[in-house]
Length: 94
Image (cartoon, rainbow, N blue to C red; front, top):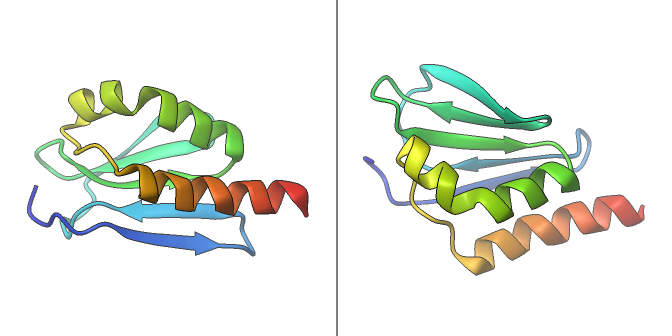
């Protein structure tokens, strides 16, 4: 992967989170679970993850290692996962 920086975008209006994993161009989007899309580059490496619900987030968190192997994606730090979880928990409460 070309860029080890993680950029997390949280959009309260659309209730969506996007985790940008690398600076690569998106070549394909994979629906890996309802409301969870994973973008890959031409080589099949993960570029970004779009999460649209707490259920999709929970699926991602529980299956991160398998997705990492399938899409050549690094594992996210627990602090980053907690940021996204808190966003969806807040949205669920409102």
